Length: 95
Image (cartoon, rainbow, N blue to C red):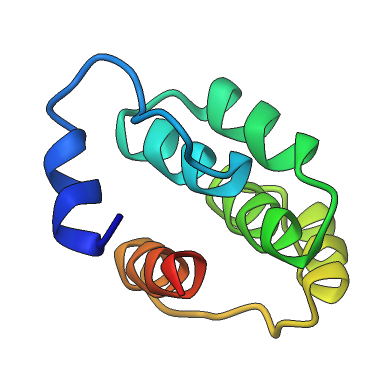
């Protein structure tokens, strides 16, 4: 999977098979389904899941919860726009 294929898959009705839960969370977020995105991120118990979880709570907005999850991910909460953070997370998770 690469970024172009991932973005192209957003035209589909379900995420591609074999994605990590964190990537599936980003996929559902891009489709506008915060609840599914959150469920996926929450179920991946590692720094990648925490990073997506943090992003989703910042977007919600629930900044206190977001701060907690950014700390769990070992990341600093950004102040920029959500699209830039989504793009950064996609590249991070595809590595």
